[in-house]
Image 1 (cartoon, rainbow, N blue to C red):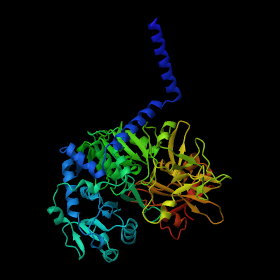
Image 2 (image 1 turned 180 degrees about the vertical axis):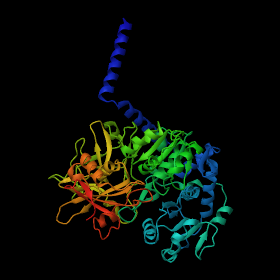
Image 3 (image 1 turned 120 degrees about the vertical axis):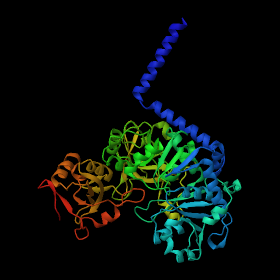
Image 4 (image 1 turned 30 degrees about the vertical axis):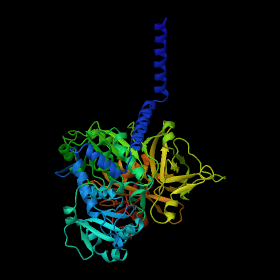
Length: 607
């Protein structure tokens, strides 16, 4: 009688599997991703050593494996290790600020663009136990000096082509006791050290590994500065543990050692360095490094290098879909695009144009303690948040008061969780397992990112400053930045949503949306700055029809200005502060300015 019993058991099991798929269609994907994440974390924590020590072990394990391609130059893992060793040996004991030799724990600021020297300097400094501080290459004078003070740099190591950025600030650097080292032959002014001959003469043998051994994994490994879209950049502390966890980034999304990963994002930000370069190391793959992104050169590069993975931010994909169509659009080996900030309309067009490319949208912050991965490829979401995921990556979405600029609290002073479908402020508990290291400088900088007494006395949460929406299926989508969302006619307006709708109108190439104060009215009215596609003229009637059909009255932009291009940071984030300050004042705006004319049913010229 065992055969019928076995058949019945199999049928019951099959029915159970079918029921799970019906009730929880993504359960297996959730389990598979969390199992992969658990294994990856266990492996990374089981292996000992700092990032520099792990880099050395990888180079010994696969010396001939191609690690980096930059133009027509190529470097194996062993060659990369020897280049980094030269930097470490050249700078070991070399006097930094105040004439004192570099010691573990000292900070050296790095002002180098996207080139191999950035990586050699970074790893070379790490081999000495020195803390690198990545500086944005656009920093000049006051902002540059601010960043050097913030991270407590004893020296500034920079590329030759960027020397003009500090030439006028050399007296200030001397007063601050900051040594200046340049990756070039010179000649340079007195007090500036050329590193070219030192590097040429330095040994490429390893320095003692104990120099890079941290006393605690929570110690600061490096500083990465925030983008400074609304003020001066802040130096976010990155721990040894966080940098090592980034070794698992591509492993989590299915990358392998046979992949060729395309990195054109700035290395001085987390996406380019920790995710792009360190992620490549984590799977032992090959990285194609670009000095800067070029939409017209991207697909030829993919074919030339055999690129299989593209590290993106959403703006790069938008640049690609705005390129003229080509018969060769699908002639490539790209199998996966991994990144953040991809708008649903661009995502959809990217797949239509360029074929079956797996898109893995993610979410994370340089200084944050919460991440999301959209491992199911669900269009428009940044990730999933099943109850299983929240066991490992706890977070909450709480109601947010746009006018007050803070979370809503009840009579007891506690925050209020949102319901599915309701936008809420993303916060994450600060615990020993999910710490927030904060920023270099005054304690108030770090304290400003924390919320206390959120649900109980004594609890502490990290405030991401991002508004998210979680639907009934557990998918989480980005809604807006708290500083960008504004309130008009008693309703909250998400600039991201309005921008996506305006950008879908034919003839609009780029758009940014923001709120502006209107005398005699509470809140802020919507305003948009748009860039028209070449050959197009502004059509007020067409835009009016589009916004009336697609947006509720309170969300429709009341004012529109046209521009030749939109101002962005070097990480492609839109700059809105100046636009919002200028408002709709015709005396401050040289370009055409339009206002919403409901009577004429069009956007009319000008005030």
